[in-house]
Length: 269
Ligand code: ADP
Image 1 (cartoon, rainbow, N blue to C red):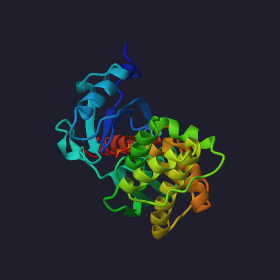
Image 2: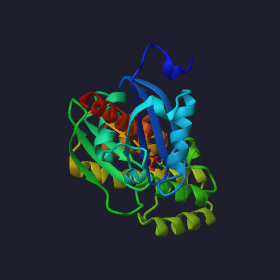
Image 3: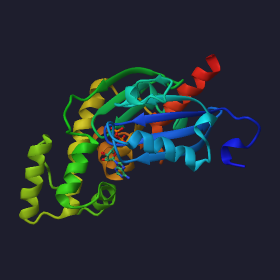
């Protein structure tokens, strides 16, 4: 018997977050238990959505017919024909983080392409939000480009910055100019951990100015893939002078919120 078929007839719902950089999906049992989760590092417009859908099903031995409802979120949410409903990333990150970290009242979501600061009420509903302009500065894209320049992998950035003896300040916020600046500092002998610390500080400054414009109410939590980078989390804590909560499932918070909406919609039907 597979995991999904246990305990009578559970209600399974799926949330799928088709992001600019990565596709995430989760399967929830009865709106309460996380049965399966998957991340595919391919964004909207690729085979990422289809792949993450299949991967999540196979992780818990479910078939497509076992899923009562699918809700899609993310940049590509309107391009996934298997989804019965679509919900904004703001609502889904708010609800997903509320499920993981119920005390959060401010959610800072840093994804591959944008940054959102969301004020959340005690029921996990968004009350207000601010989003960055269409610029890669302060986003996962900025970090991915810088990792490429330094010839390291994005998931290594957090550990690298923890070894910094100092911070090499990166003064350009524009990704293209900052890339040249990092190359030039590398050529004059700057240490990679110190450069990474400078890159994280630059992201933190940018994100903090957005967060402060929306007003910070504690507890503050991070969602999105960049929440997995402890270097950015620490730099942002320093910049905002507030503790930031994270969760190992921060990157799938949007998909989780979507699966919770799918569950609510099923109950209402
Ligand atoms: P989107 O929803 O816009 O596709 P995500 O919320 O999935 O974006 O975040 C993607 C970003 O998260 C990547 O650009 C990368 O910088 C960062 N990221 C993803 N995985 C990791 C990891 N294991 N460690 C550190 N950063 C990560």
